[in-house]
Length: 340
Image (cartoon, rainbow, N blue to C red; front, side, top):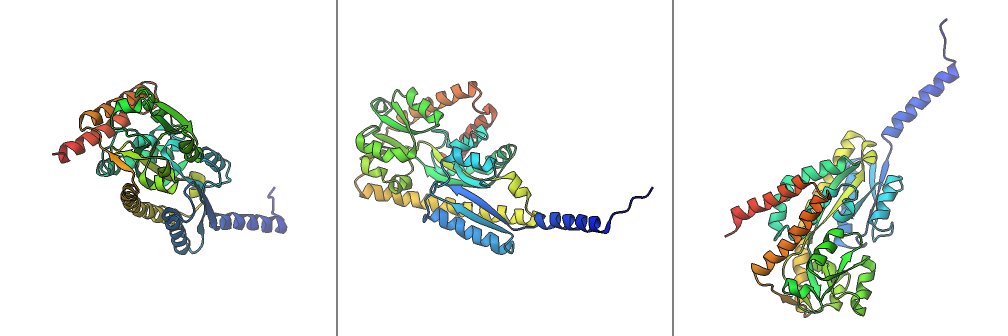
């Protein structure tokens, strides 16, 4: 017996199919959270990127930014992405390590000595990081350099021995840095960023590791007198978008989003580098004096402590040993080609 569709049923099916088709190409607003304050160059550049994306996709894709940490800390933001309340975020490498441990490979202590080394390694390792984060359901749409952090302190620190008396702030959840300072026999104090300014004033901490522009933006420079002129670690953040949100776009729109954001982050890297140079000069003009550790003896001793800490954590299975050794090998390769 041949079954025939009722005319109304056929009409309902056609409408449903049309609905599926229209939903596929429906406008999508990507909700992106970050702790970076509103009004900063970083946010303004992301706004420009959003305008460009909207224009090139004829309004099918737009960015809606939630700056200044209004969506909570990085861990809270990741939870909101997983339940669909947000689509993406710009978050630190430390937070991203909860998605995939290898995301923090650029921000390990005393791995790099200058930005040129970072760029040499990034050219070869960025694709690896993107793929590994993608395997956890997130698309990396941009990698942002925050520059090197330095030790800013009330008392001068020019040796590992000086660290023994220091009360050093470490970010909450940053086990690597905490363990490194413990190995140097200092006193790491774990606090959220929001508590550091007050803690510097009260003496709960007297030493912080931060990039120069951050020291000014957060007013932490008002609680210190010196900075140790030896790069500690390189700050990296990444903009990640839920893979489901990206797959919900037309292929051409996905490519537009990826291209525009990557171009924006590449431009931001150069802007950030210049901002940090200017900030360091401004700090020195305000009386924050540079402390020069003895090179190479002290520099090598600090690097040795960091290497021992990382090696111990490798043995605990906290890192991909092969990837970290590849990064170290690339750094050595660069130094062999460029060091006098």
